[in-house]
Image (cartoon, rainbow, N blue to C red; front, side, top):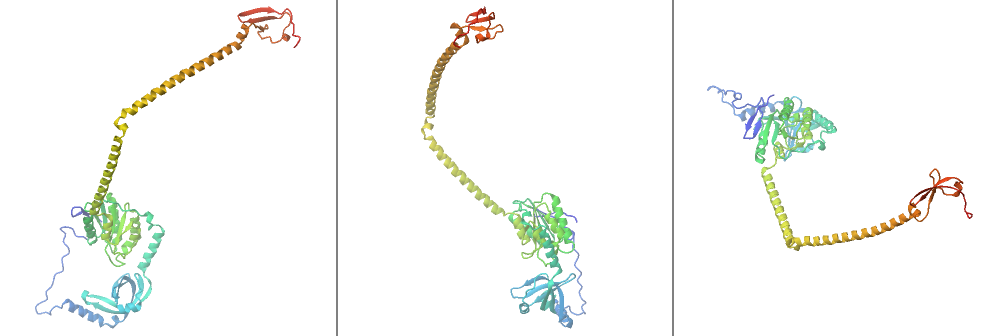
Length: 442
């Protein structure tokens, strides 16, 4: 199917489906009205015709005491205690009512999806020209096929984690473009636009038309999601429809649609039916809204509230800045009255005088230390010179070296005739041992 664009106000875009006539397109002409000939019978009123039909139905014995098996749908217990519901199977449906006395006797414990056998009689509700089954008794036969399929799919997808809250994404705070997947012929899209225009008129709203019930609904709903995903600038999507029976809402219980919602690149809000209606789409979507109008309120902020919030934030910020400036002004004024601020050079001059004193002490201490060290060094030098070999030789001693230049330590190493060299303080003397005389007291 294709998606056209249409303008709704100055900010709404829309797609037109094949069953929605566009500008200049004519709807099918109404059937011609035939006027009976003047000599023919007078036409009956709607009430008269309805009563004729009612008489035919109520006079048929087989319709006044019959039992019908089917699935409960659209179950509604009124404030007066009357039980209204639809009895359906795969091919047809029938409106039914059990009045308060019978409902109380039955306990009115039936619910949506129950498979039942209803016994009663056929009658016609004249204000709406609708035949209905006036129920005398209701016997439950178990959960209906559609509801059982719903429960089985719900359990399977839940086990896969498709309903997990940690998987779901938060809605954008200020969306620029909202996508809506619903029928272009219903009131849902217009209700969403009305709410968006009232709350936040700057956002764009794009419609992807899709049938919301019947055989075409599921593929068109998926196609609508695919179209919005291809645009690339949609920030959030609302998918849904207005209220209806359980079977009317059945397309939103489709597994393929549920998985496409899970895989959608931006958050999806499901708004199917009324607050009491729940579908698989509600469980897998990132957010569930009780109604389409409530979905519109969820996806866009209220511009007036945002302006009030910004104004309040601005006033608080200005108040904080004013208080901070006042504290800093008081602090600065307190600093200016201090002596150091009145005569700032006084502190510098005092520090300079102390620096001169410290420098003088350092120089004096350094000179004294150097003199002490010089005196100690000179004394050590004199002791070292006095203890040196040459100093010993100056005191009259000599060193004896043998022919090989080795120092002669003892007379035991000297024989008569050995040549030696005597080292004196101012030179050397060659000598020969004429006689060797060991000391007697060795």
